[in-house]
Amino acid sequence: MENDLGTKRSRLLSRIEEEEDKIAQRVYSNEDTRNDLAWKIKHLRATQCMTLEQVALRVGVGKSTVRKWETGMIANMGRDKIALLATALGTTPAYLMGWEEKSKPKPSPEEPELYEGEKELLELFRQIPYEAQKMYLEVLRASLKNQSKD
Image (cartoon, rainbow, N blue to C red):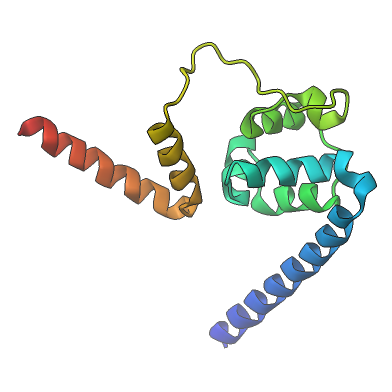
């Protein structure tokens, strides 16, 4: 019986996600909405190869909240969340809110410019499901530790 409930719950969640995706497709197909907060969030996340989970963790919300922001189901956000979201997506709150036309990366003097190989590593790492990222980091650390012993 418990397995049946899990299966039903899983199916229901899948159907909800499908409906949210349909809503998002309608929203993003309209040219006028490209300046909307929802479109900007989805677009910036996609261009940075970030998952819903990665953005959610950086902002301190659930994955479903990020999905609802991207579909426009939640339009009103607190200032603190807008600032955290802008940082997570590498832009400014002014761009997200529509006060600036172009997305300007937030200046960060402490972060050095990445080389091509580093950019590729970061892009590949962001494609790994969040749950598996810890494992890959541990493998990398162990490998580096073994190299330093040699």
